[in-house]
Image 1 (cartoon, rainbow, N blue to C red):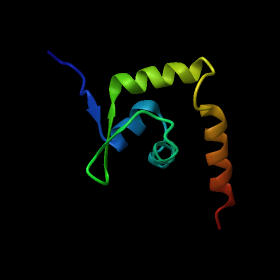
Image 2: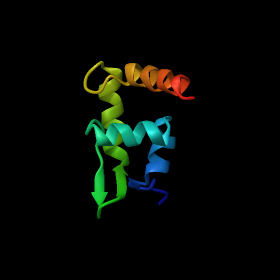
Image 3: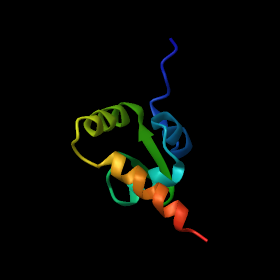
Image 4: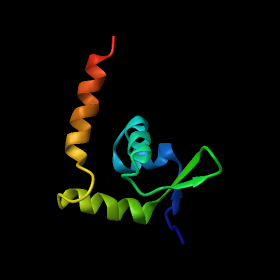
Length: 80
């Protein structure tokens, strides 16, 4: 069987949802995206939980994804 990988690293998860690693780290820090911490630093993301989280974003519930993307883009323009 060619089952997709269940647990994703932060880079894999960022690529999977089409966002930057920095965006995903901030969402983790704000406890807005489902994740599991292994030890003190290693993060893993359940692919199914990410799918459900993304579905709530498109329904206008939960973490305001579009506003966050705009805020991150704006912050990036403010750096020297």
